[in-house]
Image (cartoon, one colour):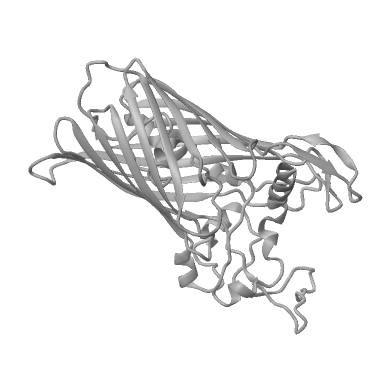
Length: 408
């Protein structure tokens, strides 16, 4: 029963979409909560336990098989010619036991300059019992979503690489049921990522070797998604900017320490504040739209929405800065065998209020890698990964067994 109730709430999210702000947002008007919502938010969930142990950041971390999600340009400089990964993430495990995220990825080096990669992300929302308005059962269904990716990455110089990713998105949440009198259908979209990555050894510290890297990605650049056959109501997918640096210190031949920072911003319109009359009802314009009191109209194209997202917050520049969220992480690596990780994730209280520490451990042996991570919330609201142990597997095939020192 808990699964049915929870899944029903999750199903409503795409239909609410930007309409969550149809009526005047009094909190937003007073400088309070004004959360940006999109369809298919599962695209933003970090799939791997390594990044999960470092605050869910990975735009500039060293390349591994999970780079497809964080920054595919890292594949151009990955040390091993072939590899793949598998991960499993329980979702809302405190409430239900059948919602989860599964992820697989694969990469193959084409030559010294370029690499091909692909991945599949699958999100299952558990089993629900559909009912009509009178509570009569209409059947059981397991809503699900998935994204299928393919990427090509290439070195541009000795230190700089670039990647382009194509993505097919499928979201089947209602099995064609009527929601609020509207006949629904599966949502379909296509999107692309554009990524760059820079990595170079530096001589900043006389007593030790060091590597500096930075990465930048604009992900999920794609058309809006619709869940109704009328195709009139469409919602943005989570187009996102992620950028950040990494510094790796080779303390000696066996010990390595890395620090990384991810800075993120959703590139979709901020919900405006709609005007109301003295009774609190929305004021409707002659063309049938709601009158906007502060902010800008969110019903724009994808590209215009990306540009508009930088200046459309109803409460001005202060609110625009609130829309950035951050991940900070550190990783200690001993002899390329044992990794210990920690991190912190921060999101402004008015834009979702996700705040949590993360811890992680990783083991590497020959071609095999195993990672674990654990999340500790620092706010009272529940986190979907609270009290959940995440794990992921990596396989780096054709790896040089003679390698001893960390790869720069």
